Image (cartoon, rainbow, N blue to C red):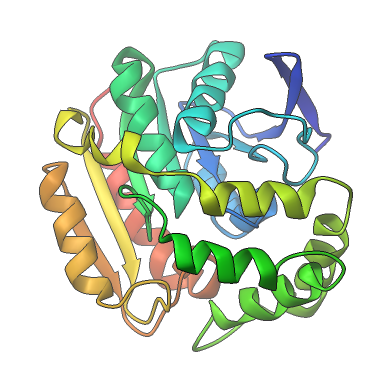
Length: 266
């Protein structure tokens, strides 16, 4: 599908839309692009949904000159896209920091969002200053794109998709572009506190999906349970999956997401 754009705050949000039916908006994680949902989107479309996948600030084809890379900023972009499509309320699926942004958006404009799927979400807290310092060095130019590609591979601990070599090469090529590595670092530094403070305010049905071997969490199952309890939702653990269960094990993860989305009222 052709890339489309929403103009927002003098910048551009890149997205594409596939299918017809109730709206589902998919938000990729920090350091990834909207093609992260390449395996889930066809299944949602086949089930009768209109699926919009977007590139977050500084990533993919979205512009880079933003002044805010926090969950608030990304949450504002989610709402801008839903309003632009004029087809809400939408189900929002967000990965990692995209999940935190989805929480913020759901509580900021609840009339626009009817359900949440939070995939291995980072939803609260401030970034560890020492860790941010180390990662800022690790992902700095000129070696940062190469290091990000290596780190990204570690997020698939059990298996990789058939297209993984080409996908990571494309991701590497994109992140080398001016401003994109800087956006990754800015998002790493940004606090997630704004979404953490709103977890208890979520009123929409919510599902947390977590890979049992996600290396970004010390205790993935405990984290999934904690977030699900905070939003009064349910959680599902995908055995042996990492940070991207919907891409690493779509045959297991997609039916779980579809069952939840199909169960939503309206």
